Amino acid sequence: MIFEQLSAGGCKSYLVGCAETCAAALIDPEIGLIDRYLGLASRHGLRIHYLIDTHTHADHFSATRGLARRLEAPVAMHRMSPAPFIDLRLDDGDMLLVGKLRLQVLHTPGHTRDSMCLRVEDRVCTGDTLLIGATGRTDLPSGDPDALHDSLFNHLLKLDPALLVFPAHDYKGRVHSTIGEEIASNPRLQVREQPQFGEMMRTLNLSMPSHLTEALRSNMNGAKTVAQMLAEAAAAVPFMSLTELRTRVESRADDLIVLDVRERDAYEAGHVPGAKLLPRGQLELRVNQDLPDPTRRIVVCCEFGRISTLATATLRELGFQRAVALDGGMKAWREAGFPLQAGREP
Ligand SMILES: [Fe+2]
Image (cartoon, rainbow, N blue to C red; front, side, top):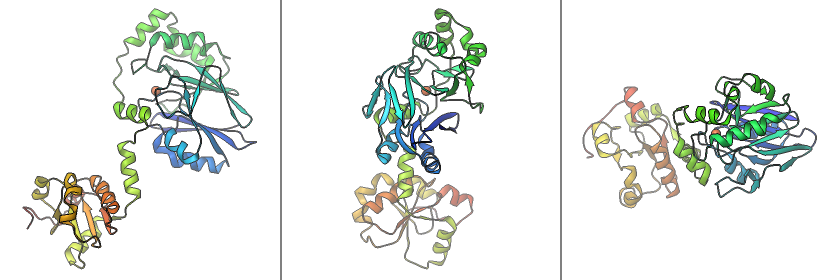
């Protein structure tokens, strides 16, 4: 078995492959690591057959759907998952064949209603049901402390104590533990009675994960994240550096249009000398009138370099084939001490 654990800010994902047949499954992939998963799969000579989420994640962005399209492989989740794009709905006791490996599904609701653990050979990927020295929280949508108690004490913890535990989270850099070690030393598992366990889980008072609403929107609806929109725009446009723009502005060497897409007050407080104002919100409305010549070279700037990237991608789609985005924004331009002009557009 090929087994790789990848970590991104406390979130763990797993590439599980059959060395003999080159088939693999990817468990809980995260959007920021897509290139690493694909790189790692190629390095091991693996082909990913299943993209699996152990549950609906509220704290990070799942890459299952994006990878599924790219790899033409199914997204697999427990059948209770609310996401409409699941190709393969799994139930307790189901098994996925990954080459000669057998991935066994255990439905373990509690952290969420659709939580499951995946057992393969000598180990179990526990998702957020069981963590090293902790358990998943039960205060997020569809969480249920009593269900978690049942999943843990009547199911997961009854497995072979020697089974290795690979959780979906660890914030202390630990790799794995075992069922036996968790039974012996996990503080939450020392509270064995259901009412006391429920009371403990209900009074943890954890702070809400950052990006909660965006993560649920993306993971449940398959919506793109803001970071994805930006990454796609950045991949579709060329950039110009701040120093290159300064040189060109100072030498007036070519007929470059500097297009400032911030709001008027920001523009009037200080812009690149000679820049033209066209706020992002009005771009599509005013483009025909304000930029009649699609063959002109346009460099687009904003405050931080993100909105300008989106605006440049829009301009390219509109046929401005020489539109480029400033690599950085007016904030960086000011901090570099580059020339500024204040006041209204001439
Ligand atoms: Fe989770």
